[in-house]
Amino acid sequence: MVKHIVMFDFKDKNREENLQKAKVMLEALLTTVPSLKSMEVGINFSQEDRAMDMSLYSEFEDKEGLEAYAIHPEHLKVVEFIKSVATASKVSDYTV
Image 1 (tube, rainbow, N blue to C red):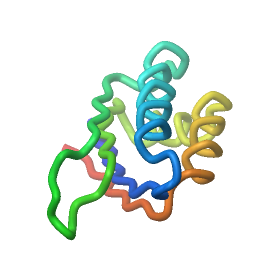
Image 2 (cartoon, one colour):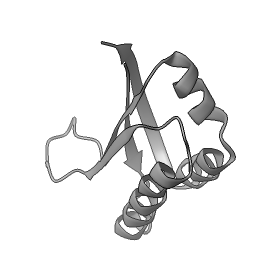
Image 3 (cartoon, rainbow, N blue to C red):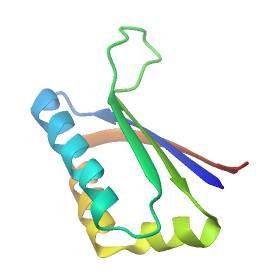
């Protein structure tokens, strides 16, 4: 099993609207990307300086599944949107 975690910081302009839109877009991938086994998308409420705005936790059967997700056309649409509204992202991928 492969775990894929991404955290994002969003631009101040339209932050709340963009967070909600990104969440909806990401969650819709569960119905369009066959290799995506599960996903959680959370919007941060912490006020700590080190906090990021959004977290994504997803699972895949194997590395090939994660690779298929990475290049899936529907995922690439979400990536394009998030890149236009985010200021930073961090990723961690691991197997269990």
